Amino acid sequence: MLSGSLFLRRMGVIAAPALLAMTTGALAQSHPLTLGMSCAQARSLVSSQRAIVLNTSAFTYGRYVGSYGYCVLGETTEPAWVPTADTPQCPVGYQCVSRTRPARN
Image (tube, rainbow, N blue to C red; front, side, top):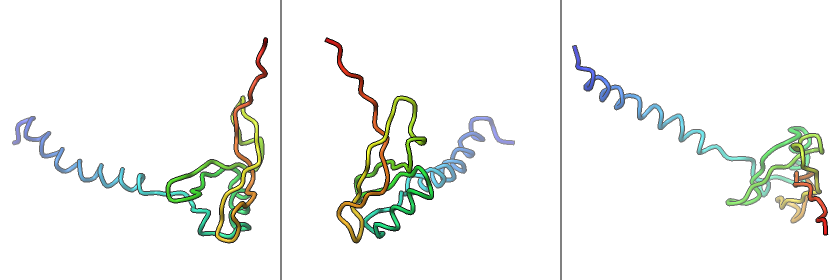
């Protein structure tokens, strides 16, 4: 029979690679890249998903929504454009932005 300490070390050696495999899969997942699709495809994706995170380049991304109903309380929508394979500024839908209150003087 193994001592408690030796048992825990052996379990750590077995469990560590399994945990690493699970986390790297999640980290490797990416969002659809708008530069790899047409404007119509990007618009259709936002429309069908209603709210989606899209990569707009290798290093940038944003959350795009189909309507105001997919923003949180205190946010409103503003039109959003992204670059696609066929259009430098494709109107895909909206982005949620914080509502600003007018300053009191």
